[in-house]
Amino acid sequence: MINDMKKILVSEEEIKDTVARLGKELTADYKGKDPLVICVLKGAIFFMTDVVRAMDCNVELDFMDVSSYGNGFESTGEVKIERDLDTNVKGRHVLIVEDIVDTGRTLRHLVELLKHRGAESVKVCTLLDKPSGRVVDMEADYVGVVVPNEFLVGYGLDFKQFYRNMPCVGVIKEEFYE
Ligand code: 5GP
Ligand code: MG
Ligand code: MG
Image (cartoon, rainbow, N blue to C red):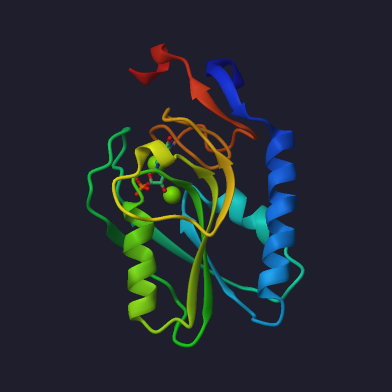
């Protein structure tokens, strides 16, 4: 698996440091607010489980699965809810945890949906930010690492559903793309 990588962009250690830094910021901002933390499946699973354990406050967890990417690299532009929340967000402080913001379409759609459902506040925490990919006006409130416009895998991010369990984030060699 690690042998399929052309280069590593975010090492295990950098992920650890990033999670600790974000955990501190989130603790300061959410203490006493009992936020509802929403993990956007499947890419954000590892990041969410790590970042909430770096938060020293009461959190409730829920999950949402949205599709916008299909199985390749290209965004389809439309966002479909594949699995919705169990929790009523009305009056809640909601923190969406994402793996990466690229075009920004997924998050824009989610933020608007949750505000429409009556959330008291909606903020976004993303491990990775690819600002060069942005097509809609959407900035995360908490950003881990800014990355270049390349297709990344690892620590939750997949290529055709594989590589999610790599402990770091990187780019795979061209020969594995087909
Ligand atoms: P959006 O384009 O809506 O901002 O991002 C939608 C989703 O596309 C992200 O949450 C992520 O799951 C996926 N995505 C965006 N960039 C990458 C990437 O470089 N690698 C992988 N594996 N997924 C990506
Ligand atoms: Mg995602
Ligand atoms: Mg994917």
